[in-house]
Amino acid sequence: MGSINKILRTTAFKLSAIYLIIFTMFATFLIVYIAINTQILMTRQLNSTIEVEVRGMLEQYRSGGMASLVKVIEARSRRPGASLYLVTDFRGHYVAGNVSTLPKWVLDERGAIEQSVPYQRLGETTRKEYNAVVSVYEIFGGYRLLVGRDVGERELFRKVVEQAFIVSAILMIVLAMLAWLFVSRKVLHRIDLITEASHTIMRGQLDERLPVTQAGDEFDRLSENLNTMLSRIEALMVGLKEVSDNIAHDLKTPLTRLRNRVEVTLADNSNDSDAYRAALEQTLEESDGLIRTFDALLRIARVEAKSTQIEKKPLDVGIIAADMAELYEPVAEDEGALLTWETDPNCIISGNRELVSQAVANLIDNALKYAVRHVREQPQQEKQTLPAQARIHVSVSRLGKKSSGPEDVDSRAIILSVSDNGPGIAKDDRTRVLQRFVRLDKSRNQPGSGLGLSLVNAVASLHEARIELGDNKPGLVFSIHFPPLLDRESDGDSKNN
Image 1 (tube, rainbow, N blue to C red):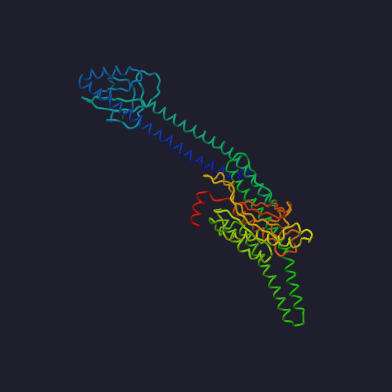
Image 2: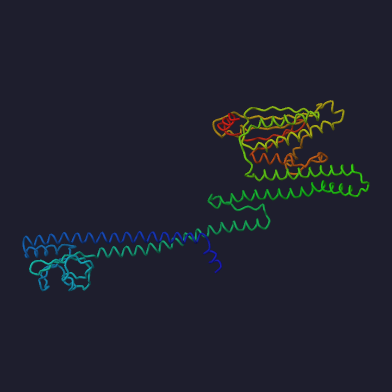
């Protein structure tokens, strides 16, 4: 009983029932419409035939009298499939024709009789009655003329229509049931598979995916879209777990240091205002660092979520890179480093100026920090063969040639690169450094939270760009491959700029 209720509640059953009702109503209407109109047409044809024959009989009577009329009726009565003819006197006695019995009331009527009249033909041995459409006319002397047509064909047609309706209804119901069984089994099987996979996912196995067949139907399209959504959710959940773990691990130390400093200051009974002031300044500095860390986390989360508030406009990456390099040039001079840049013109992409600027700033700041430190920490004997100062180079170039269509967009990527002569990053660590709070062992004592490259990675993902980390021999080359605007868009935007 439960399985039957389950089937009755399915969408497949409801749709099949609705389709069955609709098609039954349509078929019924069509059959009834055809039957009624055919009956009307056949009745009109019978009445028209009777009227023509009556006019012919009356003409014969007018031209030749009763003898001529009787002669014509006798001749026509002997023809195969003849109409009904009957002439009676004023007393109702038979004079001529091919009808033996009729209801008495028929001859008392005048004109066309609307209902069918039962009769028997003259000379038939059986007592089987037939039905006919008749017209009765009174001629001179009280004589009556009856002309009619048998309606057996019309009745036969009506029975054929009734049988066709019954057979069609039965066939329609049988086919609907077969279609419903087939659809229900197929649909229920797919739904059961999706439900089973959903229960597995709800039990905590986020790597489970909905089944996709090779049918390419709407269930496959739904499963593919849901699988994409599940992959995104899994990535967000993994990222959230990593962020939580990293926050608990990386922020525990500064918070503990902050608390210990305040505790030591409060325990100091010297009432030294300078010591209090220094402690407060250090606490304020630590607090600012924590706020910057949380701001970076929020910015990364907003970018990775592809927030609708992030507006994209056509912008020139070369101009942005040059502006940021020019901004950091005094900082590099103070650190004793050499910062250079080179950009191609009209490197137009669709992006957010603030986020792209932040990504370039993070790359320059990262390269400057580690390159300066690396050069300063080199032993004296090695400095004779190494460059005397840290070098950072920012470049923006456009690969490939312009074309009239979008098929070569990938080959014309706009590449933003920041290279340095610092320690570089090992191949095994180049993917890991793009994650949140990841700091390599050799940079643990450097200031920072390990979120700079994570933000760059999030900005690149938002702009559908590809990141490459290469060896600068020595140092690192950090490249972002931005997809350019189409030629017609970039040309128009460059004019506006």
